[in-house]
Image 1: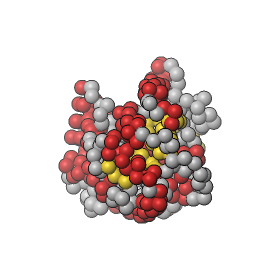
Image 2: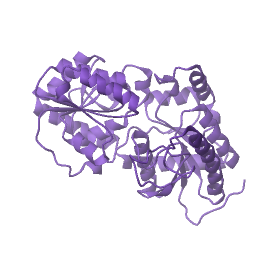
Image 3: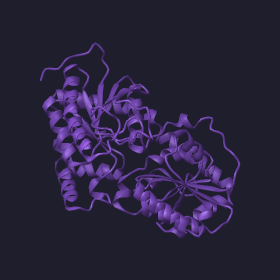
Image 4: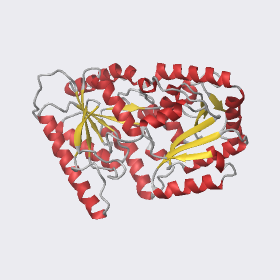
Length: 413
């Protein structure tokens, strides 16, 4: 296919598969930070979303297209909001897929689509985007932040079949990978041998935490999560109950659908420490950062499961930026970056009692806790600052584009 050219030498990147931009939780935050890293190093980024996901009452004033932090974005269905009726949703899904494909053709013909960053782990969506990219002769790299086959909630036969097909065939649809963890690096080596990859961990904009004032208060532990992880919320509640102190406070920042949120609220109400627990939802970025900065300890218990070995929670980067100590478990990426008692407090097993012991250390040794928190911040700045990944990511994407044009494989990173 003959494509247009632009006077600019900027790499033209299209970010695909992520829904809800520019407002959202960890996936949207990652999209924003990767896009900014590229833009700050001379690339141009367009984010395309198939359809809207937001509730108009909760997030008013959004537009279907615009620019945010220098990132151009378009919602192909024509609205950033999710209709309430099933019929309207189905109609917008179909319109979004058709319009998105049309938009990609226009971008390619006008020289605005050199390479795509794809964020999906669904087999049908991988096929959809992969076939469009192959038709347009545009390379794709896949952002890997989860492994579908390792997710606890994917238990139906259809989901299992889709995950197996995804693992077996993804190498045919994309030209490179951006894994977030060593587990996912090994996935690439196993299922896409020879394909190039660049590991990008959890990212954070450390400037957002500058100048946030600390306020005196009682010892406070904070856990930020999604209502999709009720077992982890239950673990945190059990650890706080095992801590068994009257002067501490637990803040749960949890958001999700009404059903799961109702069950979590009921679990909090049943807790013998319920008077010391606050359940908050849908905080603004500014308020969430303030909560992080004013916590005594930030909780992130990772389970000894394939799911938690594969992922690298976005909030770990933000936790380090606060300068307060992280309390976690020795699972997945944690031992690669943090050391118990030096840059984090790490329970040796996924056990509420052992986790509570680390929380107790934070309360009883505040000077040591502050030193650990500052050391954790240095780890974060050295490894999770989004700006560090702009140059290597841009170089990686350029090499994939050149290799595709020259019909050769780029070097692995």
